[in-house]
Each structure stands twice: as structure tokens, then as C-alpha cells.
Image (cartoon, rainbow, N blue to C red; front, side, top):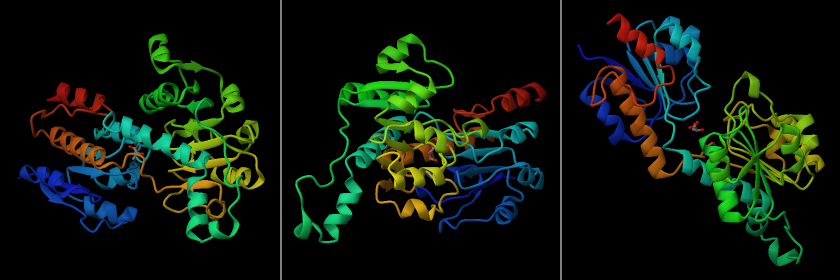
Length: 336
Ligand code: DGY
């Protein structure tokens, strides 16, 4: 009997169709958002799942779906999945790193520039017909990007790609803070200097958050950290909701603690704090950092490759390209 798999969110039908050569596929062409009980119900009898950040894969779900062998997530981040619980139950987890690095770095840079140069705020003013009434020479002045200090919290692949854009393209001084310092060769290739977190907060003109979400990065930027930043600084979050305390950020934006923010991710998204929606000095986008056609297709394709291989199909059968918990594979080989 062919294995059955569940595809939880709609993506590119021609790419998802590759799964149909090997599996019975149940998908979600209408892109409905399923509650946790509904997801559990739909996973009954399924050996694999192609999931997204909106699906919570936790111990309760895994215990209710004991036949599940592979959870293949679209996205480099996988904080929606309890990897430890998966590993303990022999469930392989995969993600889609690398293919989105440059596209997401482009977006982070664009969001930072839009916040600094007040692009959406001034567009609203223009669309509202205000320009003809009140245009002034000093309207919508904001901080420069070129030649300023770019701070990066989290210096993985995307952080490094942002650093290169800032240093090489915009003549910025680049400082970063990360759990571990980069090798000297990578630091010099990115033209980035390691600093402690306090220095990063104090000296950045534009701070970009790219650190993965975990218990230890929860509210890494809260009221106390925002107070350390320059009142002329911008903050851009393209990492995950919860790394920044959105309530504290809204207060800082309202009270002039920082100049502006660019946010692609939110605590509790897709709901957004009303206080943030009310701020005019914040650019808000709906988690689209990796959303170029080529990159989103590459992510879907890598996810399909992972799911095929995880369930013993396709050219790399048994060896998914990007496993998160490869120890599950090693265990499978040892017990085969
Ligand atoms: C990622 O890949 O983690 C992006 O944020 C999309 O979820």
C-alpha cells in the first residue's frame, strides 16, 4: 500500500504534484487554517506531513498520530515543531535552509530602509491627498542608511548576507552580536565586528534582528533593551515573533524611544497588537521575508525532496537533504 501524506498549506500545485507519484496525498488547496484538533484528525493514517510555521507539532499531536514518521517543514525556522518530542518518537524533522538566504536578506534590508526613510508613512500621506495641501521641505526626514552603523543580532547565514549588503553596498560600519563569535575569515568577508549585546544596542543606527526563536531568545529585545538604543535608531525584525516584546516596542515607538521599526513577524501572528497598528512610524508586512517566486518555489521543492527521501522515495531515498534531527536517520539505519 502506498504511504499517505498530508500537505497542510497550499503552495505550488506543480511542485506538490511530485509527491503524488509515490504517495496518496491529501492537500489543502483552499488554504484553510486548521485548528490543532482538526490537524490531528487529518493526520490520522498519514506517514508524512508537509507543514508550515502555522502548524504546531507537539507531543500531544505526535502521541495522537503514532504512525507519523516525517514532518517536513517549509521554512528555515522550525520553532513550531517540538524537535525533541519528534526525536524521542523517531519522527524525522526537516527544514528548508540556504535556498532563502539571499532573498530574506534582501527583504530585511528593504524593510530597514523603508522604516528609516519613512516610505509607507509618506505613501499614506500622499494617497490621502495631503501633499497638495501641506507639503514642506522638511517633511518625512529620517535617518540616513548609507554610512551609518548597522547592527545585527544573530549572525547566521541570513545575518551574514545582510552584513555584506550593508558593508559592501552601503558603506556601513557593521557590528554584530551572536551566541558564538564567527571565525575571523567570515568576519572579514562580511566586514563585521563582534560586539557585546549592550554595545550593539547602544551603537546601532539600524538594528536588524535575525536570531532564531527559542526559550533563550524570547523577548531578547524588551523594554530595557529598547531603552539602551538611540532615539534616532530603527529596529527591524525578520526573525520570529516573540524575539521582540511587541508591547514594549509599541511603547518605544509611541514615546520616541526609537525612531521607527520594520516588522515582518509578530508575537501571536497573524494577529497584530492594536498598539502597533496605531503607530505611524512602523512598516508592517505579513511574514513575507522569503516571498520571491523563485525562492518560495525552491523552498517548496526542497520540502518535497525531503518528504520523498524521508519516506524512502526519490533519488535521495533514505537521505533527506536537510534533516533537523539526523539522529533519527542514524537510528533507523542501526535498527534496519
Ligand atoms: C522561515 O523560513 O523561517 C521564514 O520565516 C518563513 O517561515
